[in-house]
Image 1 (cartoon, rainbow, N blue to C red):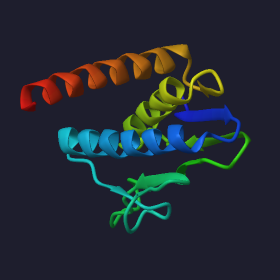
Image 2 (cartoon, rainbow, N blue to C red):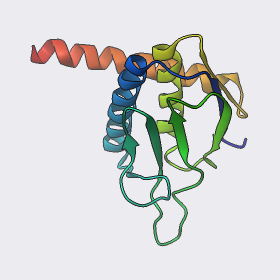
Image 3 (cartoon, rainbow, N blue to C red):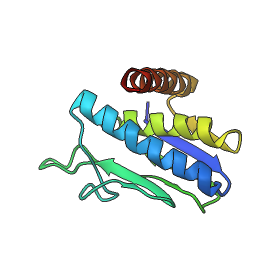
Length: 143
C-alpha cells in the first residue's frame, strides 16, 4: 500500500469550487479536532489554504519531519490529472475525505483513484456521507 491518490478533473465552476473549498476547510477542522491532527501549508509550515481558487495543505513538519509528505492540492483552473502521495501520514484521512467531497460537489467531472484500491475510495465516500449527515443534524439542533 502506497497511500497515493490521483485525481482528474476539468476547470471547476467558481460556485462549486467555493462550496468545495469551504467543505474541505470544515473537513480538515473536523478531522484535526477528532484526531489531534494539525495541518499546515504546502511546505509543512504555515496555514492550509482554502481560497476561491485553490485548496492546498500538507501535514505539519515536526522535529522528525515525519508528519508531512506531498502537498495535497486542487486548483480550480487546473485541468487534467495529478496526484498526492501521503505515505500514510496522518493527513491522509483529510486528503481522501476532500477527494470524496470533490466527487460529490463537482460531480462526474471529478474522478479520483487510489493506489490502495477501491476500498479506500468507497470508505472515503462513506465517511464523507456520514460526516455530512452529522453536520446536518448539528445544524438542525442549533436552528
